[in-house]
Amino acid sequence: MLPAALLAFAFVFVFVPPYLTFDPDQARLQNLRRDIPWHYGFLVAHVIFGTVAMVTVPFQVWPRLRQRYPAVHRFMGRAYVFGGVIPSALTSLVIVPFAMGPVGNTIGALLWLAATLYGWRMARRRQYASHRRFMIYSFALCMQIIEGRVMVLTIPFIPGFEPSSMPLLLETASWIGIVLNLLAAQWYLEWSARRNRASLATAVPAR
Ligand code: HEM
Image 1 (cartoon, rainbow, N blue to C red):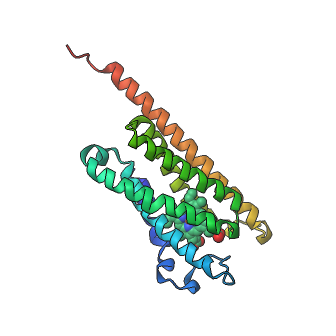
Image 2: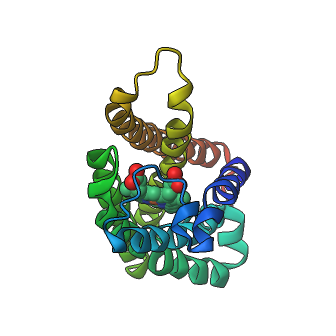
Image 3: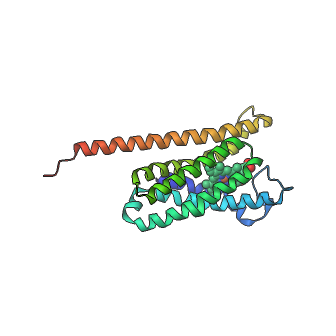
């Protein structure tokens, strides 16, 4: 989980500060709608709540923290769900009609909300295997935004890049992030289940 945490903190360090000035001139977004005054307000709210989600989620999926400090896991979990995912996903749905790549972003936000709320509900019902599964999907959907933003920055430097193809490329970028991260999450869940089965099979039976 260390690489994920480093990636999350690097993303926040690079992308978030311009929005903490509350000055629309500092916004990196090319398509900021100055004719719609609330666009900037919702964007800043989305970024701040997204930051809460992104800095808490690597700790949530870190097994050692969960096992050693369950109270910290519960406290950070509530911050992740109620101070991060829910407000960040809902505000992203408000600004998504102005984004390049609106379909992928809308699906990403809805999947992120659904996986997180279901994972939270499973924890409330003490169904911890399902809770872990859906929170790993939630983690994957939170982190996919990093790939999307990195692609936004790098796509214009691809040789032969046509500015008119930007909306299609950004739509593709958000789909790639969602699909790749969900596949990685599924692979991780299956790999860890196989590893647990193997260690159970080799364990010396208790007498
Ligand atoms: C599935 C989850 C998310 C969705 C669907 C989403 C969606 C969006 C959308 C639609 C925009 C506006 C893009 C545009 O108008 O071109 C945006 C901007 C932004 N989002 Fe998110 N977002 C998500 C999660 C996050 C998280 C977790 C963070 C963490 C800090 C974050 C940080 C940002 C930042 C910094 C911007 C401004 C981008 C820039 O300056 O280039 N987002 N997001």
